[in-house]
Every structure is written in C-alpha cells, then in structure tokens.
Length: 256
Image (cartoon, rainbow, N blue to C red; front, top):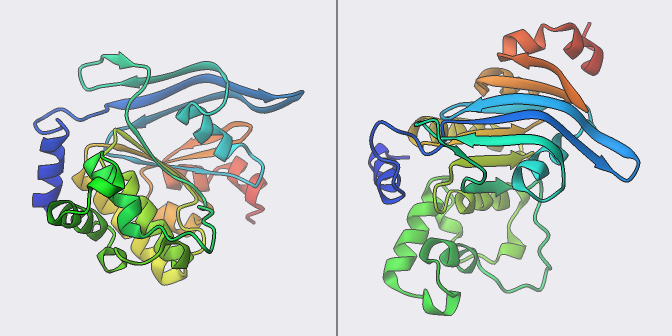
C-alpha cells in the first residue's frame, strides 16, 4: 500500500492531522447471558488506536460473542466506550467487520465489483457502473492485492480470495474500529503470512483500532501489540510475550 493513498483516504474521511479517528475502546465489566447460560462475565479490556489487539482462547471461550457485543448485535450488561483523541466519549463509532466466513449461493451472479461498488460510491449498484467508480473499486481492492478479482463472481472465489475481498470491503470507507473474526480461515500458510503483513501495514498507515479473534498463535506472537486470553472472562492480558508466558496460557493450551 502506498502512503499517498493512505493519506488521501484519511483526508477524505476527516482523519488527517494529529488526531486519530478513535483514540481507544474500553470495555468494562461486560457480561453476556443467553438463556440460562453466561457466555461472558466481567470482561475488561482496553484497545488503542494504531494497535492490533488479538483475542485468543479455546473454542467456546466467547471470543466471537465479544465481537458481536462490540457490533451491537447482541444484548449485554456493562459498558463499552469509544473515546476519541479529545477524550470525547462516543457510544457508536464507524465499525468495519470481517466475519469468519461469508455464505454465498453457488448460483449467485454477484461479482466482486457489484459487492464493492455500493460501498465505495454509497449508491445503488445499477448507478455505479462508471469509469470513476471502477477506478475507486480497483484502488480499494489493491489494498489487499486482489484487484485482479474485480470481475470475478463472489461465489467462485476461494476462501483466501474471499477474505481479502471482505477485508477490502471492511475498509471502504475507512472505519474507526476494524473487527476481524478469524480472518485467516480457509487461507494457506503463505496467504496467512501475507494477511498478517498487510494488517501490520493497515495498522501503521490508517487511523483505526484493530481487534482480531485468532487461533494463529505464531502470527499473533509476531504481529499483535496486545493479547487478551479469554475464557468467559479475561484470564491474561498484556504483550504477546507476557500472555504466552503466563500460567493461564499454559493451562488453556497445554503448553509444557
């Protein structure tokens, strides 16, 4: 990604200058109960703009549920605050989201261009078939090196290709908070490496906060700024080195 493109996008979305779009995300005493089952309890965390916070834990630990609470998709008790650089508290920032997977019927004729054009132009797809919009879509897809997929049918994309397109879509427009739920799902090792390298560039060049659920511990150790080990509640928090060396990490992942 070119720094010139990043600066232009920040300027277009009002994020140019010495302030960032979102200073931090603070979660305090978050609880989620579904029926008689408590999925999350007393969850506290803090994520800063310009950082990658990785959320790790065993299956069923409540990681995806935490993202859904941040998205406002499920009810919760406790407090989620989004604070800008001027210490102004906002209840709802702009959020980009990349799910674990996207179900697309094999007979769906929607192309990657169709998927992206509405987000780029904020207009119905049938009004967006212009050279200007096509150039904008191509530039947005280029962030994740998938501009060659623009005319491909979404249903024909491989898992890795689909995730790169979804990442491009999540950054159109550039959000304050980017949530990623297992973005490396269905991607081979080379693709996973490229994904994390690109996320590292996104973190450096865009004014946003990244929060990611991941099972890729090797890459979390290398690329995350902060790690949360979750199992209904926060068992450990800190740098990757601190969390990976913790007794809680050993108990959860069986490290000897």
